[in-house]
Image (cartoon, rainbow, N blue to C red; front, side):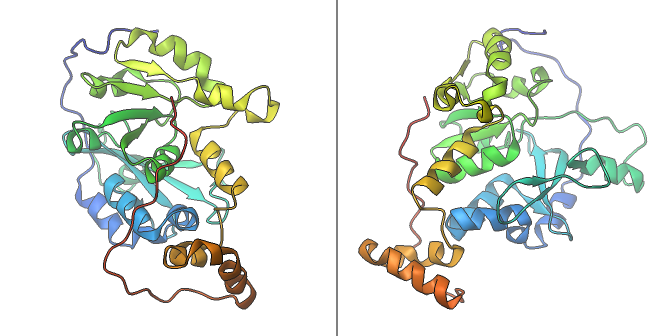
Length: 288
């Protein structure tokens, strides 16, 4: 299975990368308007979403699809995943013309002759570049990129990274050497990750989701973002996007009346004058 203590050092050739200008160019299309970030703005403060776009370098295509770039600790772009999302539900949309819901940036570039024919993919963790930016923060590891971004919006005291897959982990996990990491696998991935990551002395695997899911047969694919968003829905906090943007300026006792007023009249926010934006509060549960 290729398990080993993650503190061992591996010699690795310089990987092939994507010129960073393509990352920068994708950011110029107003990344907050991708369907994925549109969904984020329905559950998070827009300024928090703007910060997430900058932190994770979330790109966007002309069609409004999000690009999850893989940027390593050296600031090199390894590749990027292009994904479609429903802006209302936040669920991934599968392309009808394909059996897969992912398009790879390096594949598109090779088709257009923008990369060498012998260009070889060498992946890294999504969000890996944040390890250098925040050397003291605790690291949390999840499977999907969207889960990492959503969790970072609610629990910003951690660095949230994603493997992008439940398998093929070894090469990606080398970047975590010297850092204490807590992994939060999807419910149906828990047993696999628990056994696989046992060979990494710096990574512990949380059973928080397993306990939260209980015996519910429908929770097999549940991840941490699903749990957070479900609780927001139960608590009545996943509300009208316009109300989400202005509720901080309204006394809590008037929230229900204000939201009903906005819904009844179909109001949209044009702008708010402010000097200081408050951050989204930490999610009440500690995921340990």
